[in-house]
Length: 242
Length: 52
Image (cartoon, rainbow over all chains, first blue to last red; front, top):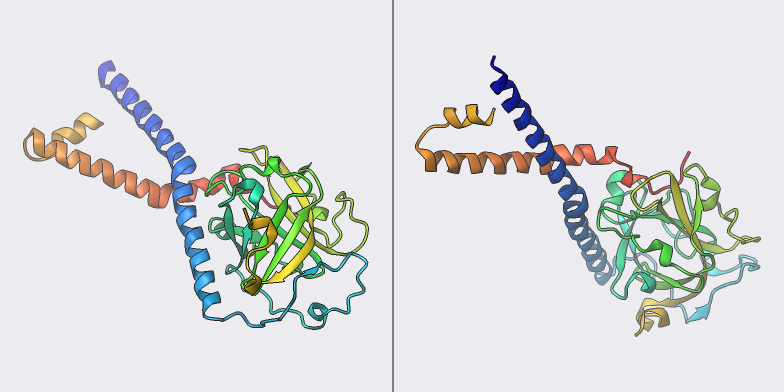
């Protein structure tokens, strides 16, 4: 085999590897977003058609009301009548965070598996349900798959996190700046999250994503408390009106 | 490598070019559909949860 053939083959291999890397970067940066956006739209569509058919189990007539405080004794209706458990891998709510963009809305699915997080935000199994006592914890991608939590560090105390399950709007208010922690710190999704500043049981929300933006060495966390609820028929809550 | 493929394609230059293009498209399709979805979870961008 002549030197010429060896050099030529080596060059061709280098070009091939280079092309592969460029394609892979294009896939990660661009194509996963395209796929995730269409998957998320699909999830939201399926939720909305489900809701419009009235498939939501319990229609609880509620008036706009301030959320029960942390010192609430637990004699309210929700405690008496716990909602049905969410189906694993299925969407059950839509989340809106005006700080991340007026049109920012993502489906929330049950579970935090890799495949679930490709289709939307993931609700930690074993944490409280929407609006219930305890901690409603949700994870989302910072980068890739539609970059749902790209602007996570912009979140500030007082920002609204609004969710709807088709019957009720839940408005949570963020209480902390993004808190950086290590991946093994599961206490951040405890019913009363450690380091959150909350001292008593209440209706909390936790959002988690990765930190740094393209890495996985740490996690960013924000905590919020339930500020208000109103029935879906009452229209969008104040936080979503322009 | 590429020269070897080119020499073994049938037809004249235009037909070979067309077949080459199709081959490239097939390779890209297989990569995007099967290979990259397999490789992507090996990267760190999927770790967004806290767990043990």
